[in-house]
Length: 412
Image (tube, rainbow, N blue to C red):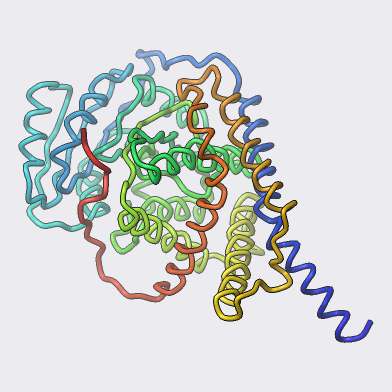
């Protein structure tokens, strides 16, 4: 085979990878989700109050005066008895602490208040509460997290019955769906985020990362890794992989629901996603050279991350060539049949998710079917932009990560 033929074959193989990698991963997520759902398909029972371990619920807040009251209300209405709520005001300059005091007065369900005068960041605020906690488990939620009444009991049962788990994360569902960008994020949480975690948990027995909006930790193990890293951009993925380095696993409880608010501006959305991407990239950078010594589950996660980064790199080069040469490279020659395949897979994704949630508390959501055709491209374009930006900032230095108010969308 001459050099020209080898180059041509290489281009074809790269083109196949670029065009069909998203489709392949979609089917893996679908099948993994279905199998996990079938395996877990049994009557959900709430834990017996007589055997309830102690739980501390941490909510760290910075300028969350408009949202935290309703969140605390949902925390006080859990079908669980042996817990207390710890609210931490991390240097807010609005009426966050006054709302905390009001919630304590109205609900009075073992609520403790901590006021920090300086904005030290979410991890610092959580560590402050962790230092004095004596509970067996710690549940971390965000100020916009509205929990289903059985969420805490379901998550406690997962950790109490599986001693290999250091943490278990629940399933966030988007509450605000007024703008198109929020509706697209709703589909992302309903489809990809849920399906990916189900598939990861089924195939590897662990997940890429717990979710900062709703995660239950085993306190002893959390303290063993030093709590949350105050220099990490994303404390959730950082602590997840600290657990993995000690030989523990992290699980997913899709029945444990919480409702959250997502950004409704492009600026707020990109800021959030670039931060997430930087956190994932930091973990990949710290572990990729340890790949041969890792367990199967950890290898599977890192391999998936590596292939995703490779796909993003190749597609970015192709798009850059398009901008320069006004034509696609041969290996990104988009044809009608490829577009049709993308649409079919995305529709299949959406139908499967609705069928799986027919008897779930998450419910079915057929009304957004009309915007599903553009969702596939929104999802992967978001991954490309946020990952490229994350690579650009990979080696930025920082001493401690403080936080600012999040884009929660328009409050009604």
